[in-house]
Image (cartoon, one colour):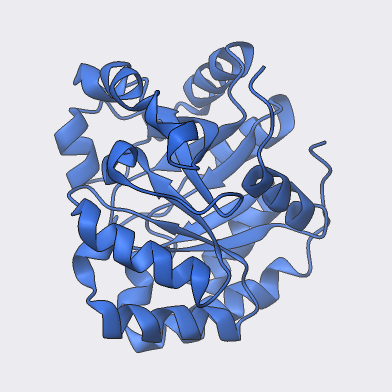
Amino acid sequence: MYPIGKVEKDIYALRKRGPIVIPQLDPDNHDQNSAERWFKRVEELGLKVISMGGSTVDALITQKLLDIAVKDHDFDVIIYMSSNPSSINGIKGKTAVYWGQIPNAQNTFYTWDGLIANSLSLERNNIDPLPTLYAFDERGTTGSAEWISRGFSIPREKPKISLAVARAAQYLGMRFYIMAGGSGSPNPPPPTHVKLLATHSNLFVIPTSGIKTKECANELFSAGADAIQIGSLLESEKGFDVLKLMVGAAKHYPGKDFI
């Protein structure tokens, strides 16, 4: 099993206190000034871990914003495979990547080729891999990431398929499961899938996409989500007010020990 890096240890330490809220910044949607405002708003909420990435990103812009996030705000930053980790110089102990496969992708770059292409660069670039399964479930639309990967969504009414996928990932040694619907998803993650994964797998379960209200966050926390990831909501100032409510809601749920 690949050893646990510092960012992953930090995530597990936070999870011991309760479920985590992870804001996601899409570098394509920000310049340096707007990103600085975004970082400050997140920092004010006391959050320590953020993610960064999108379906189509510029590695140079991502590098600039990553440096600001870590050096000026002391965030732990998780980037996505789409951010081209072979071109990113991380900060040791502060930068990780969702080192993931999309099992229901027909584009082999997202099942295997991308992992091979980027694998030798991680240690050299001070990036910790988080062994991750990234699976699309049905949300009523096709997002950019799903279109590019030519994903095959897990039907919403079939939570046992999600569990079967999660168990397969667990047996392969993966540690994280991202339930994805694509940026700006009109529908939230299905709590029935979250509950089954949280109850019957050992993976760190992160529902993403379409989480727009405190009530939705509460439903996912109640189902057993270890973290939720919030992206498109934070492209508006009002979204940070909702994020604050989600962070407050997370404090009412128990912690969980992963180590």
